[in-house]
Length: 154
Image (cartoon, rainbow, N blue to C red; front, side, top):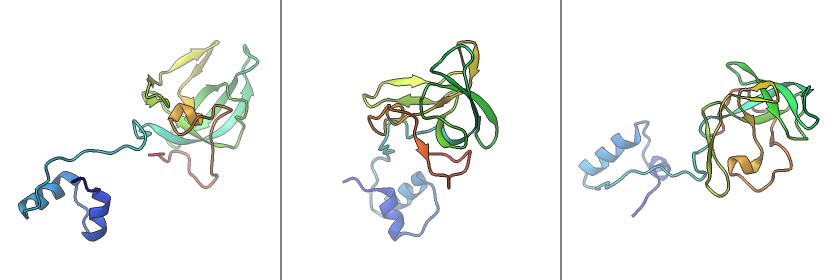
């Protein structure tokens, strides 16, 4: 039988790591055969954080691209973005350099520092389909203003 660790924590007031709790339960006679991590989204949005768009300027070499400055909490980075709805002041989902994303078909791609038409880009401002959250690719996801730059989206 599979049981959610979050469900167990509703009955046992504990702040111990999952594996330690599984050992305790096994020692009490409730054998735990295996502990697996469940991800409702492949990759669990690891490396995707809230960014605040500080500026949004036209790319000097491309009509459909914007050069943005984005506050990631701990640092400010430049990201080249092709979404038509990107604008200054928005809170957005940013996949940081090194993040592996999975699209709706489970295909993985890794975010790298890149140069797009001569402008450096340190991450990607994401649309729903790029995060595997939906099918929309009309533009980037605009998040709630209540979120803070640097917060994780896991």
